[in-house]
Length: 376
Image (spheres, rainbow, N blue to C red):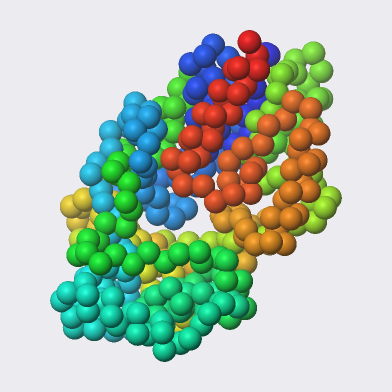
């Protein structure tokens, strides 16, 4: 069999690329090392509840074209992301808004909140932030930082905020309205049947080989002789440093560990899909109760505690660590990638960049467009 493209990775980038290319008369074979499609947005049905196996994923976008595109493959509900932050015995609304400030300081008016925050920032006297702690304090003041930023951030990054560079936090939005909607995007929701079903619909009509690691596939394919699969180009969505056998060194990633618990007879464990735990002393960053993503009324529930972890080889990489050192190393890998004949690198790992889901789709569509234009 001959294909125009071998797509490595059946996540959102690979699925979008394969779908759009099929739409334009090109053929793709998709392979993935996991036993399931959908990558990190994989959802699994557990007692009628769509469980987000690799962390909470809420689709949101301001791009009407992208919204219309995903709605071809799934019916989306009207879920609005409104997480709760738990600090010791206190609960606060996220993002930082008037509900947060009212609870924190016993005030009602935006002017009062602005005055308190401005005074705290002025009292600190930070002119040029030297680290993440100083940067965050200069943006939101002492109370919001200590209760809602410090511990959570230190858990996420695995180190003290004073040891983290200031540029990691460019802004911390403060909203002076009583609005708990985390995202500003007009289009927001979650597929009613889960993301796995959505991605499988995107891949309909495209051959997919699961449980298939790229380099093993190449080796076995080479051994197949006359029966081997041929393709013109590769679209690689795995780790770019792994592709090159870490020849320039390892890029840094943050990983996650998930502790899933099925609670029989508990209809409603925490009353919200996402509760963040912002104290450093609590080892997990959040608890997800999956049924609330789809307004479930099942008699049981499933929760997941999410623990950040330092990535090491063999672990699943979730977030690139985009600091100066890693971005510089990635730039060197990118030079190698540009020399690779007939290999395209895409997605969060292939491009070493944090992408929201809509931006992943947008980037895959752009790659398709460039490929189609080049083939004319």
